[in-house]
Length: 248
Image (cartoon, rainbow, N blue to C red; front, side):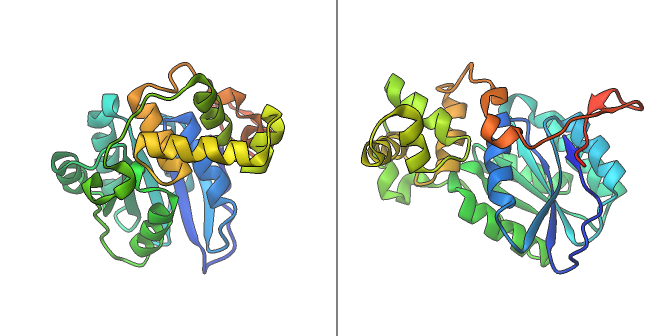
């Protein structure tokens, strides 16, 4: 978890990211740091740490709290959303989950979320939803992949090589960097990525990671191995909570 509450660019949308999935959090961090009009001011890897972070940062109306919802902890996520809504009524809340079914969306909105975007829709949809939510819009996207020609006949059986490629891709590396790490041609790496997207029925890297995680394909993958994304974080201990939290 990291915290930088000193953002000085009022024109930027400030984002607090609460995402329990380490790979998704790393991929989103990589993307958000490259967007000029969005500033990632804090991130947490658990709902408890996320709530502590939000209370410490005390977000205002220019902040969007992005909450990643895991299937096994949806009740806890709903409770957290309710607490944030009560304590910070002017802050926007955007929920992401691996599925956007009507029941999940309805409960998220009932507890106080402003917007909902399925993780399978990819990073472009998420960035657009962050901007629109910050401007006061309600964005609600449901999972409906039947209209996606790439997902007409999904076949989630990835080869060991494709799983290796996806794990490396989750670190935010380009196709050229993936090829260099694997010792293959860039075209080979690109072909692997295309096959992964086709088999999982998705069209973006973030969506592929989300879908593979949901299906258990990446089970056992340690987020700590994503050194390309984690190496620039300097963790210190906060005496009050005993949790690793801050970057300077």
